[in-house]
Image 1 (spheres, rainbow, N blue to C red):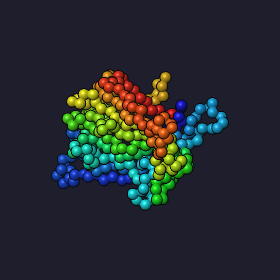
Image 2 (image 1 turned 60 degrees about the vertical axis):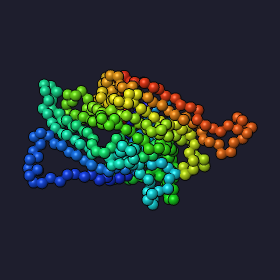
Image 3 (image 1 turned 60 degrees about the horizontal axis):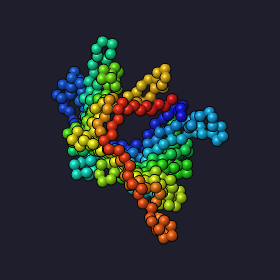
Image 4 (image 1 turned 180 degrees about the vertical axis):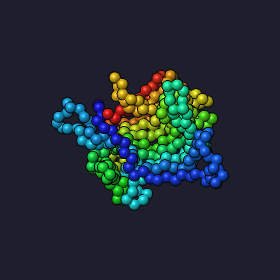
Length: 349
């Protein structure tokens, strides 16, 4: 499927606080930037109401004539439908917080940025280097429960010239319901936890201009687990609800518990070799945003636990399957797996 235009749109981004260390006149006088600039940013959490990826021309395939699938639509990440709003007439936001050693919510880590520029060598040219690291009382990041939705053109925000028209996928009164033309695809019911190895927390090195490191963004550090507590984070591919079309009732679909763990708990799943950036078009490929790794990754264990298709039956019939209740069909996954030379590209043209 070839997209004509892909627009990422951030709806209703809630403000967050940042703390900066005050400087006196003497300190300011010595901050000439000769040895680069160090910046530290503190914020307790990040919240957003909706984030949307909007495709302005739909499925632009000339073989479809009737019906026509070229209308504007989008994927939206937002809070879970069917909840009681915490604030009147406002959707409950999705929150990203830190995790402490006791697995409880804590403030997000301090972001430390060391920024410098260099003239480069030979034909590689000048570049800016931004080294990001994280510090503070944290062991990882936690994304609070959220859902992924599809939405038609009537429920997506619009930018026309200098005019911005904000819209919501929710119909909010006493409960957070969905507007007509919005469908819930995936519900993440539990906290989505990403935990890092305590002795090797993540780093990100960004180079703008020339990139002598070979990639725009290089990652470091190591992951201990994703949804590593218990059997994992429960997710559901949503088909409908107990009362059709009403997200305030129990969702119906295929559910499972996702879990990712480093096979070697001492080294973790190291991010060295992972990269990201923007690639221009070639004679055989369009340009786009890339993410991948060079070489072989560390081994990891990935599992889908407690796979269940459909919901529990309210009243069992002893004459059907001997009165057996619908239950998990088991677990699937891989142990000690690795990936070699992964490369993914997202192209918007």
